[in-house]
Amino acid sequence: MIKFIFDEDLPVISHGHGVFVYDTNGRAYLDACSGAAAVNLGHGDPQVLKAMSDQAERITFANRGAFHNEPSERLADRLSALTGYPYVFLCNSGSEAVETALRLTLQYWQECGQPQRSHFLSHAVSYHGATLGGLSLSGHPQRRRVAKALLHGFNELIPPYAYRFAQGRDDVAFSSSLLDDASRTLDAYGAGAAGVVVEPVGGAAGGAITPPDGYLPGLAALCRERDVPLIADEIMCGIGRTGTMLASEHWSIRPDMVVVGKGLGAGYAPVSAVLISRNIIDTIAAGTASVTGGHTYGCNPLGSAVALAALDAIESRGLVDAAAERGSQLRAGLEDLRQRHDVIGEVRGLGLLQGLELVSDRETRNPGDPIGSLTHTLIASARDQGLLLYPVTGGINDAVLVAPPLVTSAEEIDLLLRRLDAALTAMRRTSRCRT
Image 1 (cartoon, rainbow, N blue to C red):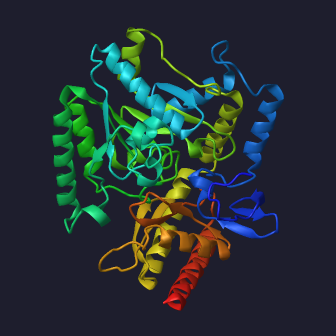
Image 2: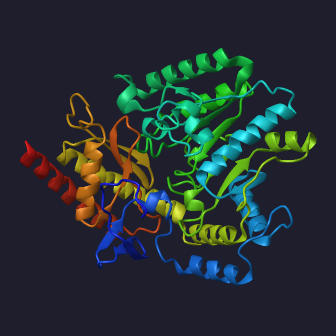
Image 3: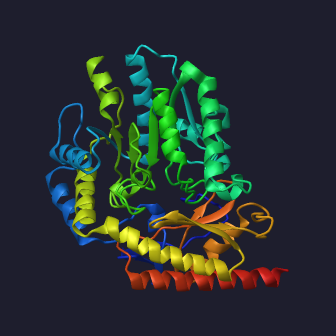
């Protein structure tokens, strides 16, 4: 038996094609969350499947301690060419990549002769992975709960979450307040500060939390002034999803490291990467000249071949620009739904990573009672309408992500919005019946 929620019976998936998946009863669902914001190319993409098959016929595993392999070398070169980062460390999952970024940062400081720098900072509403390091960074009460005794309290920065934290201030004033707090916190740790880890657009903890315009450039400047590395966790928001290859590009910032995953393998194979700046890697190369750590499936040739095919498809089909264009259409439609459904308190996000904040009362901005109940109800209502949404389960709000594949057509966006409208209407009727 495989169950994560023991009192919930889910349909059994059979197959997928394009932006649709089908269960074993033959029912079709529009995948409006790309599985878990990963299936950027939709399901059953022939270009990726051919690359997977071709590589599987050659070799599927190579021990990175004994061999280099061509697909992983080509993937590293492609990522460097696309992003300008000179060194790439390949992993399997987002959690592993975040852990690698933390470990590389600690090694960097050790090579600099400053081993006391070991404290990281992250936002109080955030999600950075299921491993202990990732959870230590995460401001995600639900995920932290069981492992709390083993975790660090890195999640100290006020989140750039205007709907809950701006308290009536405009973007300029809110951004200034956030930066003042970040400056004080960095100074409090002083020579113990190792790095700052942020999601340029938040994902699973809050639901497409998008910072005010001046915040990330200001935070990058604070980090530069103190020689503290800035690490961007773009596992969910990177690889074209927000309408730029890296979400950081929206604010013209260049973090010292960027973590990517999910869309890198497009849901066809587990693969992730850490993109590393020249200063970090040159310091290590001039010191011990060895990057410590690694994982059994790191630099996996099958995963790397899949990622190369996914990047080929994204570039050749113009899917980064498509994400921006379809994202504008999706955003306009979601804003229209907000006008007609009081349960939507806010629409936010960039490109094809959009979030709906759900509230029981718009005036008070109260979430469901208990928190999570509105999310659960909308997810179930949407599934009944043949629509899959991503539940935001951080334990601090009610929200869902709307993040369809980058290949979604204009007509499919319209269908998504019609089904979401029907789900929200059914949700409202159910709520009224209960009262």
